[in-house]
Image 1 (cartoon, one colour):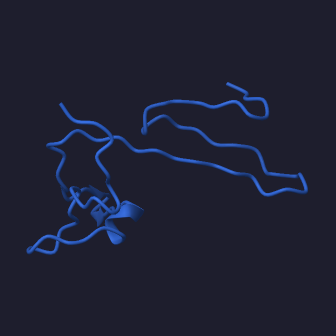
Image 2 (cartoon, rainbow, N blue to C red):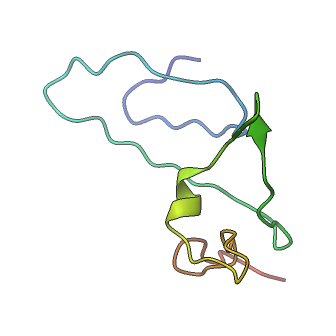
Length: 82
């Protein structure tokens, strides 16, 4: 899909996507929003034996065991609840 200036794309986080180099004078502005359900918890994930981290894992508070706390309201605010 090719987007025009001002358009937006909503897609699954595992969708392969990218963009061409920004050759304009102004910086490109991007906004990413990650949604998770209430029960989502950190899980160790390895790719070819190497542990993979999401950048937000470094920004949120940690649980007593050292794992990222995905309920940290500063990094993962509640957008709506039942």
